[in-house]
Image (tube, rainbow, N blue to C red; front, side, top):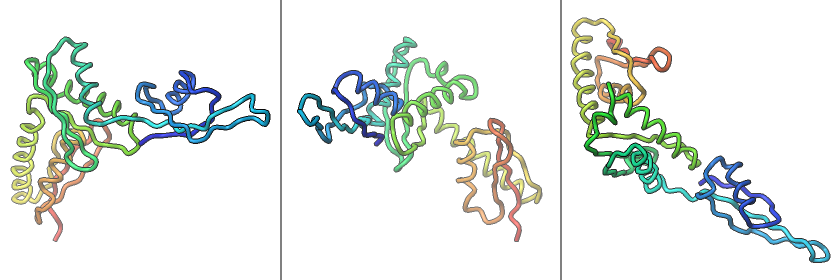
Length: 206
């Protein structure tokens, strides 16, 4: 949870605005808790030592953010979210406009995911990997990549020649690496510079 401590003369919007600026978040997500009340020698002036912390729920507030985004696009959606593990959270979206939201080769989907990821990680202390799926596109893409990984690995074993796959984002590269991680006859590595990184599948030296 992101938080800071500071001293202020009043518990008002100015204090909230200061905390929001320091934490770089919307003040609507900030809670102020008084840790200490200080008074001057004559008791005429006082100040407060406060802790400002971000009150943000990845799933609930992430869903609300997506709802607002799609409402502004005039697109009705159904959104669900779940934790895959400690650091991975998956948001799933269904709508009548799935093809538009996915875009060619999933580029619009990737853009929305990046916006969501940056929004959420601005409010939390520990970085999370935020995944977005629309209309089951990611799951279908995963199956396609796993088939590609298996087929290419078999070709590499037979030819004993390294093969370079087309450029992929980090999520897609991870699918290839994971699928072939237990194979004894091939190994994988990522090469190139973003956004043109790709996976190389090569024979494992024995």
